[in-house]
Image (tube, rainbow, N blue to C red):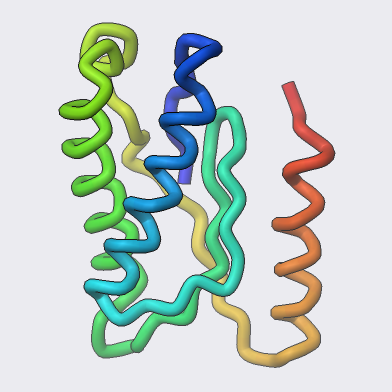
Length: 117
C-alpha cells in the first residue's frame, strides 16, 4: 500500500508508531491476523490472514480510510503537507503454502534494512 511520505523528522517515529497501532486495531476489529508488518518511508508491507468472507479489498479500504482520518486528525500538519495520505493503488498476492509465506515474510522483514530511495 503506497502513501505519500512527507513528515517532519521529529514526528516520523510518532506517526509510524501510531500507524502501527491503528493497523493493529483495525485488523482486530475485522478479525484479520497480522503475520508481518513493516512501515517503509513511502509504503507499508502487510502479510495478513484474511477471511475470504471479509475480502482483501474491504480490509485494505478500511485500513486506508480509518488510518487516514485518524492520523490527519491527530497530526494536523498532514492535511497541509499531503494532499492525500494514501494512494488509491495497492498490490495484493495470495499465499497458499507455508514455504511461500516464509519467503514473503522474509522479504517483508528485509525491506526495513534495504530501504530504497
